[in-house]
Image 1 (cartoon, rainbow, N blue to C red):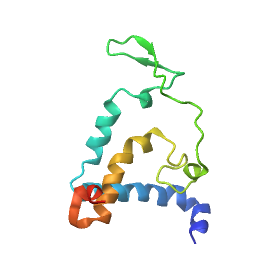
Image 2 (image 1 turned 60 degrees about the horizontal axis):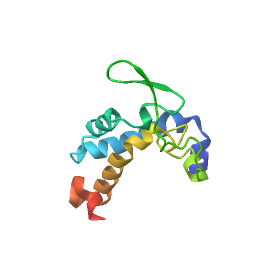
Image 3 (image 1 turned 90 degrees about the vertical axis):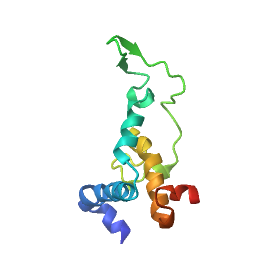
Image 4 (image 1 turned 135 degrees about the vertical axis):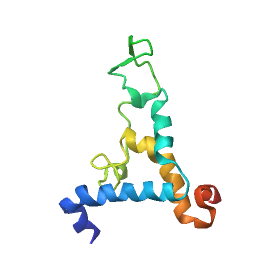
Length: 125
């Protein structure tokens, strides 16, 4: 049944957004401020702001090449992460959005799996 759903246009337009929204709602209902968490991470200086092939703007408006030598632009990625069964279609978990949301999503999963612990459910594990 899952294979049929994954081949349907409903997958991209209904199931994917619903999967992510379920995570967000779970977080919010457990006192985890999803948006504030992601906004803070996005505001930090990191490789999601630019790639080694792009220019970024410094606070004074000057162009600056990203010199982050820790960015691997050609990583070997397990096939699992390329599967469409993720809340971040079409790139699966291989996107900066997914990376920026992974911690808060993990907290939401912990809250769902350990409801007596609420927003600290992840710590219960």
